[in-house]
Length: 382
Image 1 (tube, rainbow, N blue to C red):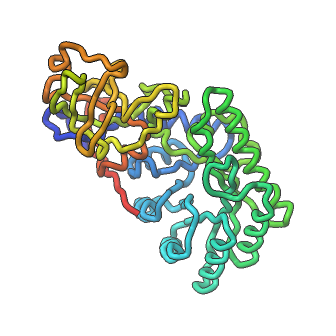
Image 2 (cartoon, one colour; image 1 turned 180 degrees about the horizontal axis):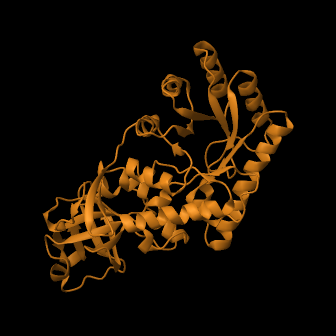
């Protein structure tokens, strides 16, 4: 149900705001980019954890979803999504939960990158007389989990799964190294590294006589800068629905593409220090300082006026649990600080990392292009 946009001054803050026009523009930009590469988009829903947003991604042309928790798998399967990849390495005590979802009709796929995990999945499948489906995670950049594409372990794990009665679906990787790239050429080169190394792993499995129908790669930066998807069957990306300051710092988006902001209220001042105090601390903005290693450090977030226009050089420079400290980037303390930011006035803060900031809230206030608004639920937990 929608109704006219309320006077923001009547709303208690902090509050997560979503600009629906920007959100839908971001969704269609990514879908168009993946369509042009000729593969499927399997969006990662961990950023928003919001069914109405996932529905819009599906309506735009996405196929299946990716989750990072089994709670997400539960929620989205209950909402009608049945093709789900759980993209975190499986461990034995989570296998019963996976089994329960699959027996409810969810086509849930899991990820392994070790002999131990493969053995556990095989043993559980035999005990339950159930055929699980698994992908082998490939390490393409030394950033996180996965098996190197040229490692003998890749084929060993594949053989254990296949011979043990698990459906070996293929390989997947997450190009987290893309977040450290700087500039267009570096992002293009990384996207090709991600693609080629995952495709190399798929070729090694096939050469060993093992099945490999799925070759799944992805991150938001590499997805948008890929020039080729040869050998790939699907691309995964997540933060693109909202974008954030880290993505803007990489050149993946503009600040005016960021669809998520935190509405906050000015609660006081420390004029001698050039501080404006607001009621959004790290409990609302998160502690993520992802822009700290970028050329422009945005502190705990970039400050906008109530309408969402960026206030040049004003950031949340420090944060306590429930207090944010808005400062000028150059340390300036204008004489009219109290008049410029009066107590009770509203500001918006653009997040460093949309996933982390969104995680602080259980709902979004969504502003539609026609001026109406709605509340969309967000869930958390594991």
